[in-house]
Image 1 (tube, helix red, strand yellow):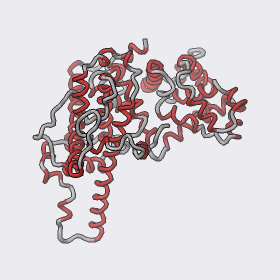
Image 2 (tube, helix red, strand yellow; image 1 turned 135 degrees about the vertical axis):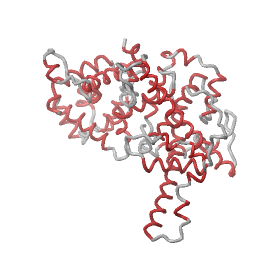
Image 3 (spheres, helix red, strand yellow; image 1 turned 30 degrees about the vertical axis):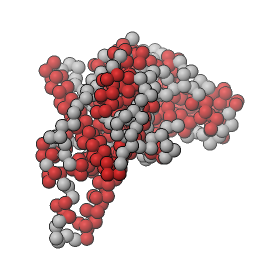
Image 4 (cartoon, rainbow, N blue to C red; image 1 turned 180 degrees about the horizontal axis):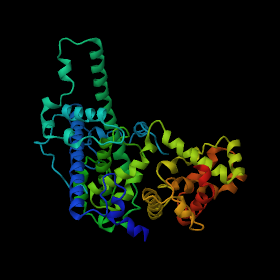
Length: 442
């Protein structure tokens, strides 16, 4: 039942940052849908321009023929080499776009495209998308209009502070180019590695033709996919398209490993890329702090898991303290990718939907007083995932206390949970924890 409702676009649309009210009129929903599609398509056009820019930079130095045919370009060069691991670890590592021709009329010069991206990164706040109209307007096709640095550089009289500011802007532009190129490489690597677990739940996408899969792969610049079947090529291409667009939409976060794990289930049940993109944006409003380089959000969540264990099982907590593992870093992966790698595809959808139901209940104003009248029921919480993670550790308290004498051993135990968890037992235990320790944690 949960999986069926997950396939309902209304369920996913409700988590989108630009979702419409389900009580709105059909006309209002159509207007919102059209606006969202246009904004997504603008982001994709910018991605194609940047991809073409990178390809143009590679040409003078020669290009590598990939085993799948075509020009490998800079994005895939060296992915199979040991050096590729350095690219993968550039950020925190975790041990239906049809073929659209690149219209030369809409293509802007390479430097213009990169400066447009760099400028949007400087002015965009962490939770706000770049202004679609201004960042991809008709005037952006004019090279002179998008040259953000040449005007100040040709001024004869400028003081030292002005010069320093320009130097910083040029450095920012260079950093932006490096960032997006790195994101493109890691996105393609992760997309190729995505598994096929989703196929049985999405027969329409699984039946995609080889020609269509290859056509879409060429549009997004996916290479080295010769070993994949058409369904996986198609899935990987959609991951690339949406994750690249998100990297432009939220340049503070960009792309980090683990984000493809969160997107994969969404695109498996949603056939329209622009709808999947906005649902992912809504999802990331809650999950984006997992991918911040300062790790403030991750540490807050790990601290919450630690508190839950401390208040529920003091014996286990003391054992963790003795092992210097009370920070619960051994559940880091669970927190970052929301149990995606520990649960099966169907179990993941079930857990996520229950989480979203709790969050929706909170937004609807359902508080403790209403729930307290319902015996043996837990109040809704924004942190149900963390209670589920704590529950998974508490389920293994005996072997942790009796057998493990280091955090590394506990980490191996947690990683070994993959494929061996009962999601319904996990949710039952999580809700029991909410009932017993929620007030202490809050």
